[in-house]
Image (cartoon, rainbow, N blue to C red; front, side):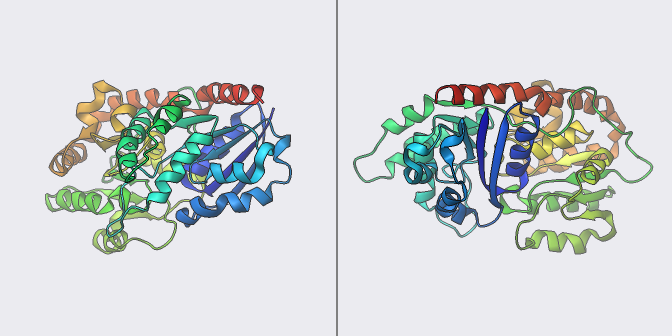
Length: 364
C-alpha cells in the first residue's frame, strides 16, 4: 500500500518517529514535512500549506499525521479527496504544562479535539498520555459557558488506542560498553533544552552533589530549537571542564557513543508522554534516575521502581550521590534494564504499526 505522511514539526521525537516508521515498514510512503519551530503557527497554518504541497491526495491508501496540525482544516480543504486518516498524538495541548507567564490559548485545545473527531484512528504514545488527554477533556468542555459538546469525548475514545513509538536501536542483545570508572562517572542529559524538562532542577541537584564532594563528568545532549535557555548558559560557566559535551550531537553514531559511555541518565521533566531519550540511554547502558510520575513508571518495570524513580528533589540528590559513590553496584541492574528496553525497538513494534496501516487502507 502507499501512504501519505505529513509531519508539520519535523524534529526531535517527531522526526525519529516518522523516519523510523517509514524505514521499517513494508509499505510505501511519501513524506512531507515542515521544520521543527514555531509550533503554534504549525497548529494554526500547517494544514493550509501542506494542502497545496500534495498534488493528488486521493491516490493514497491512507494518511498519517501528528497532532501538531489541524486535521479538520485539511479534510475541509481536500473534501472527498482526503484519504482515511490516522493521527498520532506525541503530545496534546490540554494537559501540556504552560511556560512561565503564559496563559492557555483554548483554540489549541479545540484543535486537538477537532483533529481527534475527524480522524479515523487516534493513537497515543503511552497509556499515561491517553489517560491525561481524556482526563482533561471533561474539565476543558466545562470551560464553555453553554451548549457544551460532551459527546465528543466518547466519540474520540471509541477510536483511540495506545501504541508505543518505536526506537532506533536494533533488537537482540544489548550493545553495552564497560563503564570507564577510572574517570569520574559520566552523567547524561539528553532531553530538549526547554522549560518542561526543568533543567534548573537538574543543575541544582548537580550543585548539591558537587558541594558534598562527589565528582562527575557531564554530557549535555538534546536539541535546542531557538534561544539557549539561561540555565544552560549558567551551567556552562559553573561546571566548566566537567562538561565534556555541550549541545546537540548531529551524528547518530556519536550520540550513541556518548550514551554508551554514560553511567547515569537523569530526567527532571515536568512533562513526558513517553520518553524516547530515556529508553535510548537505558538501552545503551545508562542507569536511570527519573521522576516517579508522568510516563516513567510505565516505561520502567515495577521491580526497578525503588532504585530508578524518585519522588522529591531531596530524594533525587540522595540517589544521585549513591550512584556516584558506588556505580559498580548497579552494573547488573543496568544490564537487566537494557535488555528490557529491547521491546521498544522498531524491529519488534513495526508489525503493530503496519497492521494499523492495513486496517486504515482496507476500509477506503
